[in-house]
Length: 390
Image (tube, rainbow, N blue to C red; front, side):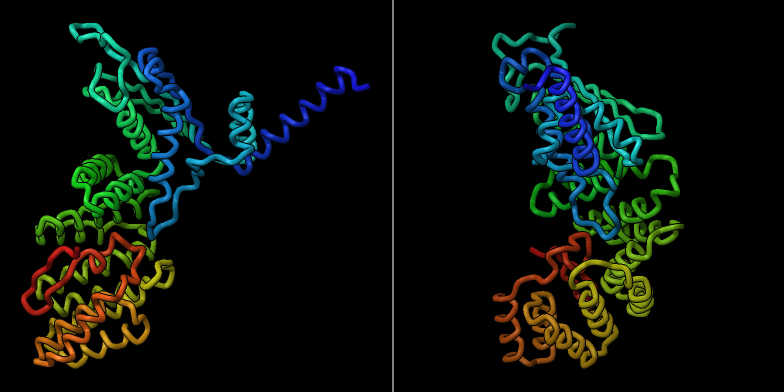
Protein backbone atom coordinates (compact mmCIF):
# COMPACT_ATOMS: atom_id res chain seq x y z
CA UNK A 1 0.00 0.00 0.00
CA UNK A 2 1.27 3.47 -0.88
CA UNK A 3 1.32 5.82 2.09
CA UNK A 4 0.54 9.55 2.01
CA UNK A 5 4.24 10.47 1.96
CA UNK A 6 4.82 8.45 -1.20
CA UNK A 7 1.71 9.97 -2.82
CA UNK A 8 2.95 13.43 -1.88
CA UNK A 9 6.37 12.71 -3.41
CA UNK A 10 4.83 11.27 -6.57
CA UNK A 11 2.50 14.27 -6.89
CA UNK A 12 5.45 16.62 -6.41
CA UNK A 13 7.41 14.84 -9.16
CA UNK A 14 4.41 15.02 -11.53
CA UNK A 15 3.88 18.72 -10.82
CA UNK A 16 7.60 19.32 -11.27
CA UNK A 17 7.63 17.57 -14.62
CA UNK A 18 4.58 19.52 -15.77
CA UNK A 19 6.09 22.81 -14.68
CA UNK A 20 9.45 21.97 -16.25
CA UNK A 21 7.96 20.94 -19.60
CA UNK A 22 5.71 24.00 -19.64
CA UNK A 23 8.71 26.23 -18.94
CA UNK A 24 10.83 24.77 -21.74
CA UNK A 25 8.25 24.08 -24.43
CA UNK A 26 5.21 26.16 -23.49
CA UNK A 27 4.27 29.79 -24.02
CA UNK A 28 6.54 32.50 -22.67
CA UNK A 29 3.58 34.87 -22.34
CA UNK A 30 1.72 34.83 -19.02
CA UNK A 31 -1.66 36.56 -18.96
CA UNK A 32 -4.00 37.17 -16.06
CA UNK A 33 -7.06 39.36 -16.57
CA UNK A 34 -9.66 40.19 -13.94
CA UNK A 35 -13.14 40.97 -15.28
CA UNK A 36 -15.97 43.07 -13.83
CA UNK A 37 -18.86 41.08 -12.36
CA UNK A 38 -21.36 42.45 -14.89
CA UNK A 39 -19.23 41.05 -17.72
CA UNK A 40 -18.86 37.68 -16.00
CA UNK A 41 -22.66 37.53 -15.63
CA UNK A 42 -22.94 38.09 -19.37
CA UNK A 43 -20.59 35.18 -20.03
CA UNK A 44 -17.39 37.13 -20.67
CA UNK A 45 -15.25 35.48 -18.01
CA UNK A 46 -11.58 35.77 -17.09
CA UNK A 47 -10.90 32.69 -19.22
CA UNK A 48 -12.70 34.28 -22.18
CA UNK A 49 -10.71 37.49 -21.85
CA UNK A 50 -7.41 35.64 -21.60
CA UNK A 51 -8.24 33.48 -24.64
CA UNK A 52 -9.06 36.57 -26.73
CA UNK A 53 -5.83 38.20 -25.53
CA UNK A 54 -3.69 35.16 -26.42
CA UNK A 55 -5.29 34.77 -29.87
CA UNK A 56 -4.62 38.42 -30.73
CA UNK A 57 -1.06 38.26 -29.40
CA UNK A 58 -0.42 35.11 -31.46
CA UNK A 59 -1.72 36.84 -34.61
CA UNK A 60 0.65 39.75 -34.07
CA UNK A 61 3.77 37.74 -33.29
CA UNK A 62 3.25 35.33 -36.20
CA UNK A 63 3.03 37.99 -38.90
CA UNK A 64 5.48 37.31 -41.74
CA UNK A 65 8.44 39.67 -41.63
CA UNK A 66 11.83 39.90 -43.23
CA UNK A 67 13.53 40.29 -39.83
CA UNK A 68 13.53 37.66 -37.06
CA UNK A 69 10.45 37.39 -34.89
CA UNK A 70 10.69 38.17 -31.18
CA UNK A 71 11.69 35.22 -29.01
CA UNK A 72 8.28 35.37 -27.34
CA UNK A 73 6.31 32.14 -27.80
CA UNK A 74 2.57 32.65 -28.08
CA UNK A 75 0.07 29.98 -29.09
CA UNK A 76 -3.66 30.59 -29.30
CA UNK A 77 -4.09 26.80 -28.92
CA UNK A 78 -1.93 25.77 -25.93
CA UNK A 79 -0.21 22.43 -25.65
CA UNK A 80 -1.53 19.78 -23.25
CA UNK A 81 1.27 20.52 -20.81
CA UNK A 82 0.64 24.28 -20.88
CA UNK A 83 -3.10 23.73 -20.49
CA UNK A 84 -2.51 21.61 -17.36
CA UNK A 85 -0.05 24.03 -15.77
CA UNK A 86 -2.51 26.93 -15.42
CA UNK A 87 -5.41 25.20 -13.58
CA UNK A 88 -2.88 23.57 -11.26
CA UNK A 89 -1.67 27.09 -10.32
CA UNK A 90 1.82 26.36 -11.63
CA UNK A 91 2.16 29.60 -13.62
CA UNK A 92 4.40 31.22 -11.02
CA UNK A 93 6.57 28.11 -10.84
CA UNK A 94 6.80 27.96 -14.64
CA UNK A 95 7.83 31.62 -14.83
CA UNK A 96 10.45 31.08 -12.11
CA UNK A 97 11.92 28.07 -13.95
CA UNK A 98 12.04 30.05 -17.21
CA UNK A 99 13.90 32.80 -15.37
CA UNK A 100 16.43 30.33 -13.99
CA UNK A 101 16.94 28.83 -17.46
CA UNK A 102 17.46 32.25 -19.04
CA UNK A 103 14.20 32.04 -21.02
CA UNK A 104 12.69 35.51 -21.23
CA UNK A 105 8.99 35.64 -20.51
CA UNK A 106 6.39 38.38 -20.62
CA UNK A 107 3.95 38.83 -17.76
CA UNK A 108 0.75 40.74 -18.50
CA UNK A 109 -1.80 41.59 -15.85
CA UNK A 110 -5.06 43.29 -16.66
CA UNK A 111 -8.35 44.31 -15.11
CA UNK A 112 -11.53 45.23 -16.99
CA UNK A 113 -13.74 47.66 -15.11
CA UNK A 114 -17.31 48.70 -15.96
CA UNK A 115 -17.92 52.34 -15.12
CA UNK A 116 -21.34 53.08 -13.58
CA UNK A 117 -20.62 56.11 -11.39
CA UNK A 118 -19.96 59.78 -12.04
CA UNK A 119 -23.11 60.30 -14.08
CA UNK A 120 -22.63 57.21 -16.25
CA UNK A 121 -25.76 55.14 -16.81
CA UNK A 122 -25.78 51.74 -15.14
CA UNK A 123 -26.89 48.79 -17.22
CA UNK A 124 -30.26 47.36 -16.20
CA UNK A 125 -29.23 44.02 -17.67
CA UNK A 126 -25.88 42.24 -17.84
CA UNK A 127 -23.50 43.96 -20.25
CA UNK A 128 -23.27 42.28 -23.65
CA UNK A 129 -19.55 42.15 -24.56
CA UNK A 130 -20.11 42.37 -28.32
CA UNK A 131 -22.70 45.15 -28.30
CA UNK A 132 -23.04 48.63 -26.85
CA UNK A 133 -23.07 48.85 -23.08
CA UNK A 134 -21.54 50.61 -20.14
CA UNK A 135 -18.17 52.27 -20.82
CA UNK A 136 -15.30 49.90 -20.03
CA UNK A 137 -11.76 50.59 -18.87
CA UNK A 138 -8.85 48.16 -18.93
CA UNK A 139 -5.78 48.56 -16.79
CA UNK A 140 -2.82 46.75 -18.39
CA UNK A 141 0.55 46.14 -16.72
CA UNK A 142 3.45 44.57 -18.64
CA UNK A 143 6.49 43.14 -16.90
CA UNK A 144 9.55 42.07 -18.89
CA UNK A 145 12.83 40.69 -17.52
CA UNK A 146 15.45 43.34 -16.79
CA UNK A 147 13.05 46.16 -17.63
CA UNK A 148 10.94 48.55 -15.62
CA UNK A 149 7.26 47.51 -15.61
CA UNK A 150 4.97 49.69 -17.73
CA UNK A 151 1.26 50.26 -17.48
CA UNK A 152 -1.59 52.02 -19.22
CA UNK A 153 -5.36 52.45 -19.02
CA UNK A 154 -7.38 51.83 -22.17
CA UNK A 155 -10.95 53.07 -22.56
CA UNK A 156 -13.77 51.48 -24.56
CA UNK A 157 -16.76 53.87 -24.61
CA UNK A 158 -19.04 51.47 -26.49
CA UNK A 159 -18.61 48.68 -23.95
CA UNK A 160 -17.21 46.13 -26.42
CA UNK A 161 -15.10 43.95 -24.13
CA UNK A 162 -13.66 41.83 -26.93
CA UNK A 163 -12.41 44.88 -28.82
CA UNK A 164 -10.96 46.25 -25.59
CA UNK A 165 -9.02 43.06 -24.83
CA UNK A 166 -7.65 42.98 -28.39
CA UNK A 167 -6.45 46.56 -27.95
CA UNK A 168 -4.85 45.53 -24.66
CA UNK A 169 -3.02 42.71 -26.43
CA UNK A 170 -1.84 45.10 -29.12
CA UNK A 171 -0.52 47.56 -26.54
CA UNK A 172 1.26 44.78 -24.64
CA UNK A 173 2.87 43.44 -27.83
CA UNK A 174 4.06 46.96 -28.69
CA UNK A 175 6.27 46.75 -25.62
CA UNK A 176 7.91 43.64 -27.10
CA UNK A 177 8.03 44.41 -30.83
CA UNK A 178 6.25 47.58 -31.98
CA UNK A 179 6.94 46.85 -35.65
CA UNK A 180 5.11 43.51 -35.38
CA UNK A 181 1.99 45.38 -34.28
CA UNK A 182 2.31 47.84 -37.17
CA UNK A 183 2.82 45.00 -39.63
CA UNK A 184 -0.11 42.96 -38.30
CA UNK A 185 -2.47 45.92 -38.73
CA UNK A 186 -1.05 46.68 -42.18
CA UNK A 187 -1.41 43.09 -43.43
CA UNK A 188 -5.01 43.01 -42.22
CA UNK A 189 -5.61 46.40 -43.81
CA UNK A 190 -4.43 45.50 -47.31
CA UNK A 191 -6.96 42.67 -47.27
CA UNK A 192 -9.68 45.34 -47.31
CA UNK A 193 -10.15 46.55 -43.73
CA UNK A 194 -9.61 50.32 -43.89
CA UNK A 195 -9.76 50.65 -40.12
CA UNK A 196 -6.75 48.34 -39.83
CA UNK A 197 -4.78 50.66 -42.13
CA UNK A 198 -5.62 53.54 -39.81
CA UNK A 199 -4.51 51.49 -36.81
CA UNK A 200 -1.25 50.64 -38.60
CA UNK A 201 -0.51 54.33 -39.15
CA UNK A 202 -1.39 55.18 -35.55
CA UNK A 203 0.77 52.39 -34.13
CA UNK A 204 3.65 53.41 -36.42
CA UNK A 205 3.47 57.02 -35.25
CA UNK A 206 3.48 55.93 -31.60
CA UNK A 207 6.63 53.90 -32.19
CA UNK A 208 8.42 56.51 -34.28
CA UNK A 209 7.65 59.21 -31.71
CA UNK A 210 9.44 57.22 -29.00
CA UNK A 211 13.09 57.90 -28.09
CA UNK A 212 15.72 56.23 -30.25
CA UNK A 213 16.70 52.67 -29.28
CA UNK A 214 19.68 51.21 -31.20
CA UNK A 215 18.42 47.67 -30.58
CA UNK A 216 15.30 48.47 -32.60
CA UNK A 217 16.99 50.01 -35.63
CA UNK A 218 15.63 47.42 -38.07
CA UNK A 219 12.14 47.70 -36.61
CA UNK A 220 12.24 51.48 -36.94
CA UNK A 221 13.46 51.29 -40.55
CA UNK A 222 10.78 48.77 -41.53
CA UNK A 223 8.14 50.87 -39.80
CA UNK A 224 9.21 53.76 -42.05
CA UNK A 225 8.87 51.31 -44.93
CA UNK A 226 5.26 50.55 -43.97
CA UNK A 227 4.56 54.28 -43.65
CA UNK A 228 5.85 54.69 -47.21
CA UNK A 229 3.49 51.97 -48.46
CA UNK A 230 0.58 53.60 -46.63
CA UNK A 231 1.43 56.87 -48.38
CA UNK A 232 1.54 55.08 -51.75
CA UNK A 233 -1.91 53.64 -51.09
CA UNK A 234 -3.13 57.24 -50.98
CA UNK A 235 -1.02 58.15 -54.03
CA UNK A 236 1.15 60.43 -51.90
CA UNK A 237 4.33 59.61 -53.79
CA UNK A 238 6.43 62.45 -52.36
CA UNK A 239 5.50 61.46 -48.80
CA UNK A 240 6.42 57.85 -49.55
CA UNK A 241 9.82 58.97 -50.80
CA UNK A 242 10.39 61.02 -47.63
CA UNK A 243 9.66 57.96 -45.46
CA UNK A 244 12.08 55.77 -47.41
CA UNK A 245 14.75 58.51 -47.28
CA UNK A 246 14.40 58.51 -43.48
CA UNK A 247 14.65 54.71 -43.41
CA UNK A 248 17.83 54.80 -45.51
CA UNK A 249 19.80 56.84 -42.97
CA UNK A 250 18.97 54.74 -39.91
CA UNK A 251 22.18 53.06 -38.70
CA UNK A 252 22.53 49.45 -37.59
CA UNK A 253 19.76 48.02 -39.80
CA UNK A 254 19.93 44.31 -40.69
CA UNK A 255 20.99 43.55 -44.30
CA UNK A 256 17.72 41.79 -45.14
CA UNK A 257 15.74 44.83 -44.02
CA UNK A 258 18.03 47.06 -46.09
CA UNK A 259 17.38 44.82 -49.11
CA UNK A 260 13.61 45.12 -48.80
CA UNK A 261 13.66 48.88 -48.24
CA UNK A 262 16.06 49.45 -51.15
CA UNK A 263 13.83 47.38 -53.45
CA UNK A 264 10.79 49.43 -52.48
CA UNK A 265 12.78 52.63 -52.94
CA UNK A 266 13.87 51.44 -56.39
CA UNK A 267 10.24 50.73 -57.33
CA UNK A 268 9.28 54.23 -56.20
CA UNK A 269 12.12 55.74 -58.26
CA UNK A 270 10.69 54.04 -61.37
CA UNK A 271 7.30 55.57 -60.58
CA UNK A 272 9.04 58.94 -60.29
CA UNK A 273 10.76 58.43 -63.68
CA UNK A 274 14.28 58.26 -62.24
CA UNK A 275 15.68 55.06 -63.81
CA UNK A 276 19.33 55.75 -62.98
CA UNK A 277 18.51 56.19 -59.28
CA UNK A 278 16.28 53.13 -59.42
CA UNK A 279 19.16 51.08 -60.85
CA UNK A 280 21.49 52.13 -58.05
CA UNK A 281 18.94 51.23 -55.40
CA UNK A 282 18.31 47.87 -57.05
CA UNK A 283 22.03 47.13 -56.97
CA UNK A 284 22.05 47.93 -53.25
CA UNK A 285 19.11 45.59 -52.72
CA UNK A 286 20.87 42.75 -54.55
CA UNK A 287 24.04 43.28 -52.51
CA UNK A 288 22.09 43.05 -49.23
CA UNK A 289 19.72 40.23 -50.23
CA UNK A 290 21.87 37.21 -49.36
CA UNK A 291 20.15 36.75 -45.99
CA UNK A 292 16.63 37.41 -47.28
CA UNK A 293 14.37 34.42 -46.61
CA UNK A 294 11.36 35.26 -48.79
CA UNK A 295 10.16 32.98 -51.61
CA UNK A 296 10.49 34.71 -54.96
CA UNK A 297 12.59 37.63 -53.71
CA UNK A 298 15.25 37.07 -56.37
CA UNK A 299 12.53 37.18 -59.03
CA UNK A 300 11.26 40.44 -57.55
CA UNK A 301 14.73 41.83 -58.18
CA UNK A 302 14.69 40.59 -61.78
CA UNK A 303 11.22 42.04 -62.35
CA UNK A 304 12.42 45.35 -60.98
CA UNK A 305 15.38 45.25 -63.36
CA UNK A 306 12.92 44.82 -66.22
CA UNK A 307 10.87 47.81 -65.03
CA UNK A 308 14.01 49.96 -64.82
CA UNK A 309 15.07 48.99 -68.34
CA UNK A 310 11.57 49.77 -69.62
CA UNK A 311 11.60 53.14 -67.83
CA UNK A 312 14.95 53.96 -69.44
CA UNK A 313 13.62 53.06 -72.90
CA UNK A 314 15.47 49.73 -73.22
CA UNK A 315 12.42 47.75 -74.38
CA UNK A 316 14.22 44.60 -75.58
CA UNK A 317 16.16 44.30 -72.32
CA UNK A 318 12.94 44.71 -70.34
CA UNK A 319 11.17 42.05 -72.37
CA UNK A 320 14.08 39.67 -71.85
CA UNK A 321 13.95 40.13 -68.09
CA UNK A 322 10.22 39.48 -67.89
CA UNK A 323 10.64 36.33 -70.00
CA UNK A 324 13.48 35.17 -67.72
CA UNK A 325 11.17 35.41 -64.72
CA UNK A 326 8.44 33.49 -66.54
CA UNK A 327 10.93 30.77 -67.47
CA UNK A 328 11.77 30.39 -63.77
CA UNK A 329 8.24 30.95 -62.44
CA UNK A 330 5.66 30.16 -65.14
CA UNK A 331 2.79 31.10 -62.82
CA UNK A 332 4.09 34.58 -62.04
CA UNK A 333 1.06 36.81 -62.46
CA UNK A 334 3.31 39.87 -62.18
CA UNK A 335 5.70 38.89 -64.97
CA UNK A 336 2.85 37.95 -67.34
CA UNK A 337 1.12 41.27 -66.57
CA UNK A 338 4.13 43.43 -67.37
CA UNK A 339 5.10 41.41 -70.44
CA UNK A 340 1.54 41.71 -71.79
CA UNK A 341 1.59 45.49 -71.36
CA UNK A 342 5.02 45.78 -72.95
CA UNK A 343 4.07 43.63 -75.97
CA UNK A 344 0.88 45.63 -76.48
CA UNK A 345 2.95 48.86 -76.36
CA UNK A 346 5.23 47.34 -79.06
CA UNK A 347 2.25 46.54 -81.25
CA UNK A 348 2.43 42.77 -80.73
CA UNK A 349 -1.30 42.35 -80.12
CA UNK A 350 -1.35 38.54 -80.38
CA UNK A 351 1.56 38.20 -77.98
CA UNK A 352 -0.10 40.58 -75.56
CA UNK A 353 -3.37 38.64 -75.66
CA UNK A 354 -1.53 35.39 -74.94
CA UNK A 355 0.22 36.93 -71.94
CA UNK A 356 -3.03 38.46 -70.67
CA UNK A 357 -4.63 35.03 -70.79
CA UNK A 358 -1.63 33.59 -68.94
CA UNK A 359 -1.97 36.33 -66.34
CA UNK A 360 -5.63 35.48 -65.74
CA UNK A 361 -4.92 31.80 -65.08
CA UNK A 362 -1.72 32.43 -63.11
CA UNK A 363 -1.44 32.84 -59.39
CA UNK A 364 0.90 35.08 -57.49
CA UNK A 365 4.15 33.38 -56.58
CA UNK A 366 4.64 36.04 -53.91
CA UNK A 367 2.48 34.57 -51.16
CA UNK A 368 4.73 36.31 -48.67
CA UNK A 369 6.35 39.72 -48.75
CA UNK A 370 3.13 41.70 -48.56
CA UNK A 371 5.11 44.76 -47.45
CA UNK A 372 6.81 44.95 -50.86
CA UNK A 373 5.68 47.63 -53.31
CA UNK A 374 6.10 45.27 -56.28
CA UNK A 375 3.52 42.96 -54.67
CA UNK A 376 1.00 45.68 -53.81
CA UNK A 377 1.16 47.99 -56.83
CA UNK A 378 1.38 48.11 -60.60
CA UNK A 379 3.97 50.57 -61.90
CA UNK A 380 3.70 52.43 -65.20
CA UNK A 381 7.38 52.82 -66.15
CA UNK A 382 6.57 54.94 -69.21
CA UNK A 383 4.25 57.55 -67.71
CA UNK A 384 5.53 57.34 -64.14
CA UNK A 385 2.26 56.33 -62.49
CA UNK A 386 1.30 53.75 -59.88
CA UNK A 387 -2.00 51.96 -59.19
CA UNK A 388 -3.07 49.63 -56.40
CA UNK A 389 -3.21 45.95 -57.33
CA UNK A 390 -6.56 44.32 -56.75
